[in-house]
Image 1 (cartoon, rainbow, N blue to C red):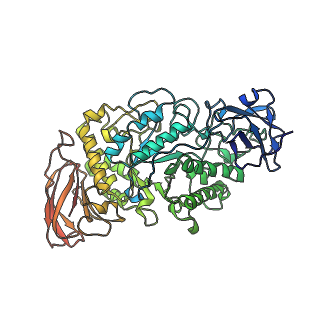
Image 2: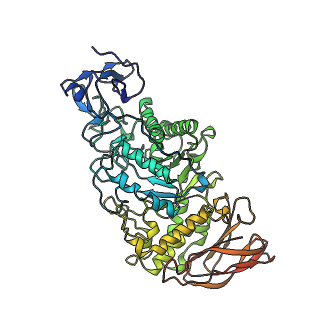
Length: 601
């Protein structure tokens, strides 16, 4: 007869001479664990009921690296909290949580972040063998550092069915995808990223599980029936609330404290054991509402507020333990409550992906006729923010969702000029979009390959064509130059890191201009001018916030960026005390077609 363990924690927890196994199975009649430590001899080593829904035992000789599996009521199950698995329908593996970390790292201030979104399965240059993708991607950290980004947003790397996926079908959320490498491979990836000055932000999927290869499915034998169907059991809603866009019966039951703890512990594991610098929560609108909508608070579709409370709890825990770490919501409903502090009733996220930027900006860049572009929509996109704080939004023109063929989407150059993504129109307007991303208030993000004019749609089988780096090295230089300006690399564009923006000109001629600043003054005030037409303007009179000389720090029409660009003179200018566009001074500028200028003092 076994006795419960006195050691805390859930899952497989190694100690000096064995391993503690503890699992939540409130409706089970018996739970045993099997592995090489008992020669996989049926029925295995029994776990004792603790009387609180959990079963546990200290099993001597169960060692780090041993595979293991539970039998619950005589049925085989992988541990839902297994830190490693042989594959999604294989065995759990006992893992030691410690790691010989080598590199200290300080998270950059959020107004200095530049994010690079990466899918581990398609980013490396050449096809890599399974379990080598973390190391393969890490070889290019020097490239990312030199490009100027300082944060990697990694698409989900938790264990999923098969060996290729976007990652948004997680089966084992505590385990690293076995086709990418093991837990130590991921930790080495993070450690090496930190050595190169790169933060690592991981996508986590808490709005649904699976739907396939789920260790949580009917885990202890209990489940209910809904509309004549067997439902998922203790980890899931067992009625209409289980329905998600990614499966018919796979929304977690946020009303159960043990399920909420399952996700809270998972978030803290990634941040503390793996030393990740932030988390991006996928589709938070489906955590807080069955249909992913904003509805009356009393609506049953809001799940009694339990999903909302889960997000608040996780963010409070992170802020209490590691407040410098970044949490990002992908909600796309432009809901300012997501990024309000929890004491004010908000969900407590630090930032959120901004639909108020990407959709109107992409529309303005892709509409074929210049006269059909809405510069007023672009103005609203530049000015949009949540709760008066620029860093509460992540802004971009490409993300995995926006460029995936399975979503009916295209990479931006191909959306601008279908079939001619390497042509003049595609290069000019996509780089105009890049200038908007890096000069507008917010945390800028680009998607892998965007900096080399990648136009193949994203998919888990579509590897980045790195030969484009040589073909479009000038475009890469353009992105590098913009990122340096955004991060104030030359100490003369500090305003691009500031909170303030004034879109002071929306011209009928298709020119938009805005002023960015932090505290104001030389080296701080920045004026950004964007021409959304095919017409060059050798002399265009604009307002300026200060008199005196203004130097062009960036001109996207420079032929060094592409030999077919026009090299229109975006000359240095001097502002005189003649008010214009609501500003105290004015000056002439020159700007090429579909081009951007950045000027400062």
